[in-house]
Amino acid sequence: MAEHITQQLASLSVQESELLEELIECARYGELEEIQAVVTTSGPEKAKQLLAHQGEFGKTPLHMAAANGHLDVIEYLISIISPEAVNIQNEQGNTALHWAATNGHAKAVECLITKGKADYKLKNAAGHTAMLEAEIHEREQVVAWMLINTEPEEELQVTNGDGSDEEEDSDDEENQAGPSGSSA
Image (cartoon, rainbow, N blue to C red; front, side, top):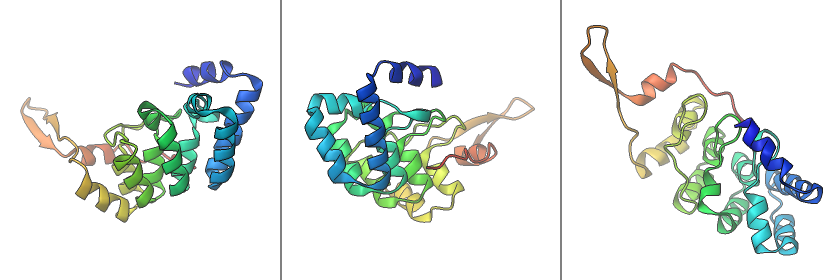
């Protein structure tokens, strides 16, 4: 994944790389007007392309807005970027949804899933979904919203030592892997 990100950054001009870093920082701090100014100056197509690129460690402006719960920025970004860009994974395999869930931003999680159509079943490099990250970090509001508003995660078939199958809840098995340790 890191190689893909390096290739992406290399495809940007110096000016575009600087704009991307500016957008990432503005999203991190919730500076919607500054993001809108960059989008207006760049033009909608160029902005859409730029917002889908990944910066250092694979983060995008949407990752940073979600990690910090900037709902107005999230809504604006998902109105511009392609549906696929909502699910971009960083170097650790985390999406913007993972970061919003990890940090307990329930409204951001709701927006990413309902308006952005974020794939809540995607797993990061640690094998964790966004809901599992929320559980690990004790983000009860996020977990409660996701339990009510998303389909349950599939159960895994675990083979016992004697060859028989036993159903096990995927969350239990994933908890054994430990937290992914990602945050913004």
